[in-house]
Image (cartoon, rainbow, N blue to C red):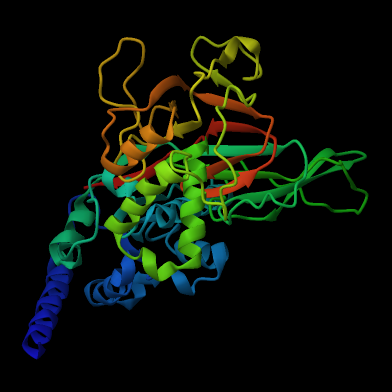
Amino acid sequence: MATGVVQSAVELTSSAASVAKAPSPAGSAEEALLCFVNKKSGGGAGTRVYNSYVELLGAGNVVDLGVLSGNSELDATLAKYAGAPHFGARILACGGDGTGGWLLAAVDRVTHAAQQSAPDTKCSFSLAMMPLGTGNDLSRQFRWGTGFSRRMLSARWVERVRAAQKRPLDRWKVIVWPSKTDPGDQPPPVMTVHTEASHPTKGTIHKAVRRGNSFSGAGEEEHSKADGLEQPTGDPDFFTGTFTNYFSLGSDAKVANAFHVARDANPKAFKSQIGNQIYYARMGATVGGLFGCLPCCCPRTPPRLSADGVQLFVRTAASPPGDVGQAANRVEIPKGVRALAFLGLTNYGGGRNLWGRMPSTQWTKPSICDGVLDIVGFTSPVQMGCVMGCNYFRSAVRIAQGTEVKVEMPNRNFVQIDGEPWVQSSAIIEIICEPDKAQMLQG
């Protein structure tokens, strides 16, 4: 055992030396490489990754996300690289999709702030994913792997990140306008909560009363309350969030909610990536209603969305100008559909391709950077369980593709954004493409 430990230490020291001596690839001499590690990810692998990268890159270039107090410290860390001499950096995000989403939102905020303070200065941050989560869809999408392995702690892997090509990625903004206030509606920490008021001269003003981890900053103009003359509008607070992977509502969000409840109750039982996927697939059948529900978190089977009064509006190239919610943009939801998923990536739930690979003249080929969402539906718990468990079905139900979406949800239902679920009362939900794309690194 002692011999193995000494050998590993020698290998790590050798790797660190080779990173220090290796020349930077052409065009990247000015780019710093920062490593952000979620130590809680990977069932203990996160701590190992952190310690290894401190040796490889130096303590000043490795950040433990667990010690940062919210967005402010994360933004301050990235802001050090937004100006001269760096004007950006390459980021290695060691964690799951949630970690990647948090860092992408921070990049949005820091880049936006830099452009506001110095319009002629351009900074460029790009991000690579080390897969330490359960699904790792961002990592899969950009060819960094499906799960953690020891080779990711090598100098060769670091140089692969340094030399990787940059690829654009769409970012999508979700706005949830509740029709009424319900104490049971608790959007997850990734969502930003806004409140509105009426001002005698300024009209309707709003302020973010809680900034979530997916708060991007760009396009989030905040009007502060300056003179105390504001009066509440009487409307409920509204929520916003930004996603790259997907937004969904219905039975799949219900499964995600049940998974989160079970994991929060017994986190030690959810440290295996494969075990988590198997557990998630089993819930796809049981929680979805095939073998009964879990009464602790799922009181009933999600209804068929069309029967529940859910209406879907999608803007396409053929849509008339004006509000997306016009009758001309209405898309019929197939009668059997119990869940809608709005896909930003071609990977979902651990590499599942919900759109499918079958050729079709009716649809365009899905892309992650064309400003178009791919919208699919699940019709039954059996279909969801098979797709999530073994990717048996080649695709879900293809419903629409569009550049902007509006959903009218008249009754309470489960929703989720990039795997973060909650229960939402009746609401209007809008999805629009953010003006700036993320820059990802492709392995």
